[in-house]
Length: 323
Image 1: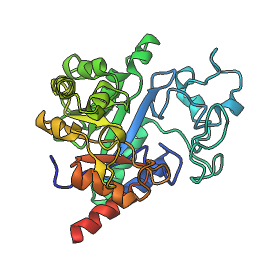
Image 2: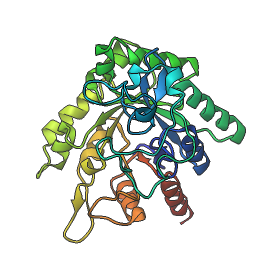
Image 3: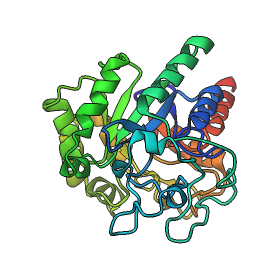
Image 4: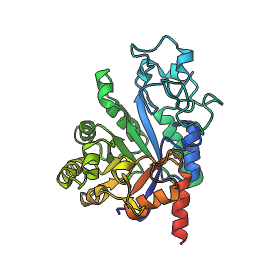
């Protein structure tokens, strides 16, 4: 494993406790001891990067009520169609399904209650850097550029805009407390080679990606797995797979089935940061968070993990360190 202690990455902040990507959720994640805090980034109509998981507003704000006629032909409300001033009027809320209007995670913060806002990337960085200064504990940032190809089709180079903001706040090199991630491989390579990004880059891969399929095949398709990881290593410093690409199930004896993904990624000098650990959405084959964490941390040897509940892996690691 590349690190003696895996990094705890707060997925959309402490999103298991407060509405995702709000400054309140980020402050809670920092207080809980997260090593890094994630920012999904999309653009507004006036080209301002805001922290929002999707290019749509309707699942996490009251945009449908405030601007009922501003949807596109597909019925969705796009952040790119609203100015920052308009987005600031919205109330951010716990995530709901755009089809049913019901909370995606029913036991979390009550949807539509209290008052939260969609922050800009700059505002969130200033919050985290401010807490780093006031607490003396440094938490890094972990932005994801969302759908850069789609943004370019709409006339906006989101990658360049995000890099400019990161550079402004001192995030430039691999020594800085930042990882920049993206699902689109061509774009991540462009960020490294054409836009000249020197910071650590992480290639995100879905549970249905070539990497995941090769790792979970029976037997594993090692040629494809190594080929894909070797290609990532040309421009990236790490890979961010779905949890199922590392532990897809359990053995007849009840232990974890561990794929070769982490081992092979390490052979190509790539760190591995899987997503997402959720105690209210556990894999069907495991119902105990500490057991699940042990499988990934102690047996699969991951280098970091994304979680909606950062206090839980922090507590797990602290307990393990005391033993």
